[in-house]
Each structure stands twice: as C-alpha cells, then as structure tokens.
Length: 506
Ligand code: NAD
Image 1 (cartoon, protein in one colour):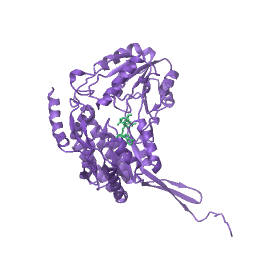
Image 2: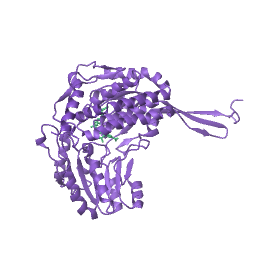
Image 3: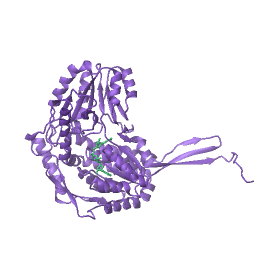
Image 4: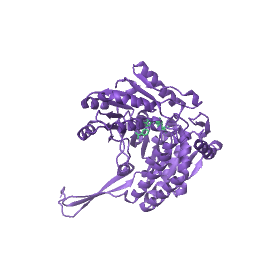
C-alpha cells in the first residue's frame, strides 16, 4: 500500500466516522431530521461492500415536510436581492473549496470513483456556485421589444420550489450543477440524491446552512426513487423537476408529474459515438478515446462508448488502444495512482458483466478485460473491457452499459460514419476526430446530438448549453439556459396611447 493511499484512507476514515456512527437522515428547514418512518437501508462502499452507515428511507410525509418548507421559504428567497444571493452563493463556493478534500474522499468511498477525478469534481462544484452567483443579480433581466405604438418588455421570476433528482455517478458535482442556478435565480429546492451515494448531499446541506442560505431554501430527502423520488415529482407545491438519470426513469417521471403539470428538464442516458477518421491526429485521438470511456469508471453520461473507426486506421489504432486498455490501473479509489475504481454497486457490477456475455453471444470479440478482478478483494472490481469485431446492431452498441466498456465498429466512408452515429435511440454527445476542417463542420452538422466536440474530449464551458436530443434528454443546462428552465417569463405590453382600439357596441 502506497504512503499516499494510507494517508488518504486515514483521512477518509475520519470524515466517514460520523456517517458510520449516526443514522443519515434528511435535511429539512435548515436542520438534520430523521424520517417519519422507521425504515433504513445500509449504504455500502463499492471498495469491499462493507457498510458506511445506515440511511433513512424517505416517506411521503418526509417529502411533504420538505416541500412545505420549500414553499414557505420561497417568497422571501425570491424577493431577496440578487446581490445578496450572489454574496451567499460565493460564500457557499468558498466553503466547498475549504471542504473539497473531505467531499472528494467521502465521495470516492461512497461511489467508487477514483480520487484523481473526485478532487477535480469537488472543485468544479465550487465553480458551479461561483458561476451562478455572479449571474444572480441579472437573472430577472428580460428583453425590450418595440412595436410602432407599443413597447413590450419581459421580466423573469423564479418558478417556485423545484425538485432536483440526481444519480450516483458524480453525485456532488451534478447536484451543484442543478441546484446552484435554481438558488441563484430565487427558487427553493427539494433534493432527492441517489440511494447508492447519499453522503455528499448531506455535506452540501450543511454547507448551505453555514453559507447563510435561509432555512427551508435547501432541503434534502434521502431514500428510494419509487417512494421519495416519486413523491417529489407528484407534490403540488413543487413546480418543476430537474432530473438526471436513466431514460426509463425520465419517462416515468414525466408520467408521474403529468397530473400536476410539472415542467421537466431531463438529462438522460447516452450511447455516444467517437468517430475517428484516418487523417486524425493519432496520439491525441487515442488519448481522448481512452479518457472518454475509461475515466470516471465509464459511469459518465458523456462517455464515448462507441468507437467508430475508419478502416484504414484500424491496423495501427486497435493494437495501440488494446495496449492502453490492458494497462489501465484498476485499484483502490483513494490511491492517487488509480485510474479505474470499483463499480458503484454489486447490482451495477452484475449489469456491466452481463454485457460481456451478451457480446460473446452476439459474436463480438472481447479483446481485453471483461472479468471480475478477484485478487483485489470483495469489492466490485471489474477489468475494463474492449469489444471489437462488433456491429452497430449488437446490444453492446445500442444499450447504455454505463461502465468501463468500449465497443469498436469499423466504417469506410463519411456517409457511413454519419449513418452509424445516428443509428441510435440516444443523442447526447458525439466526438469527431479529423484534420479536415470541412469534414469536421459537415460531421458536426450531420450527427444527431445535443453536444459535439471536434478534435477534443468533453471540454466544459459553463455558459454553453448542455443537454441531449432523442432519448438523451429534454432541455438545456448551462449559462442562461438554466435560468430559462427555473424561471417564468412575463411579457408586459404598454401602449403609447395613440393606436386605434376596435370599437364595439357604440
Ligand atoms: P436512475 O434513473 O436509476 O436514478 C436517478 C435518480 O432517480 C435516483 O435518485 C433515483 O432514486 C431516482 N428515481 C428512480 N426512480 C424514480 C421515480 N420513479 N421517480 C422519481 N425519482 C426516481 O439513474 P442512475 O442509475 O442513478 O444514474 C445513471 C444514469 O444517469 C445513466 O443513464 C446516465 O447516463 C444518466 N446520467 C445522465 C447525465 C446527463 O447529463 N445526461 C449525467 C449523469 C448521469
């Protein structure tokens, strides 16, 4: 065991002790509370499937209490000047930065993501708050539109209490990405974190209190999706649902929210293509292909899980790719040398493993990996897998595996590349590698995706829109796009007093 892993383990134990010793409850109206129900579940670490402590299972009554707190706090938070919200949210970001090490260590142990990525994710969480803090004062700004005898202007107001439902892949970062703009524009929040990774949400709630977020503005209800999550989506006081998770869950949420006419914003699954043409910068393309599927354990919505490789390049590219995948360092998530950690949960591990069998059954080649790593102990250790000799009709090319699993499919022409890329129910991202700028532009236009990167891995620019098409989502996050979702736009039309009013009944 390296000295750095030893030291990280000792620090993590210190931060985790409170979760082991005390039941993790909810956060409602500015304070930790236990559930109205008596049921709890064991929160396991994927490192060895031992318990990190027990967590309450939220009930309808718990969600009701959280939604009522959010509704009661809404008018005052809505009317708080943007400059004051800006000050509070900057303080929030400062406090996240101060606790970034704790957040990263807790998150790594809770969801198995390697510490090298979780450190950056914690700081990105602070960045999300800073970005939206700076925009809080102008969130209400509208537009002026002139007519010959009227002036129209718009103003925006926060929609009300909103529900935020998040997954387990990068729980802390994703929660901040959704919640920071909601708070910045004056909404109050009920957050339902994923049951596989509940811990960092409680740290965030504590930070909210310390930052000066008024009681009731930020609420967290733990528990399962089909009870607590469902109750958030059905509650009449909750005006909108920002959801990140699986496509099938998104469709359920849409149905659940229909009777109360919920506004929804969905960031869902993906089966994203990375298209590498013969003329690509070989080394940079190889680095990006490996990074975009094997970082974050492949548990990443924007991961490029389908490699469309132009045939002229396969002879050189495939051996280099295989060598890289074989060389990936799977290990303890708190080891700074680790590149791939254990998969989040035994059930997810089983799901990922099942695709190795599916690949074989359908005639693909398992070129590298694909098996449990027993020698690492009783955790969810999986050897990153590379599938070759695959076609786009196979399950490994069509379904989101959400693990360190890459499917390689060859193509000959640009037209074929577009057809393969678009032959998917999903449309979140696409990555294109070519030195031909004209081709880069043509491909960017032709591929069906909410986000396209040309000659780059996923590079995030916070003002730019983030979201998917087809089964990958509805709506966009980022910059002002998030405010559009969390706010209502009102149009005010004022006459100059000169226009002719139609006369009836004179
Ligand atoms: P999931 O859909 O199983 O769960 C997500 C959240 O929804 C959890 O908090 C869960 O408790 C809750 N939930 C489940 N059923 C519910 C219901 N009926 N009503 C309300 N809430 C319910 O997803 P997951 O397995 O936690 O996360 C992995 C998925 O998330 C992948 O498909 C991945 O692509 C997607 N994801 C998408 C993005 C994006 O930006 N597009 C980002 C990250 C993850």
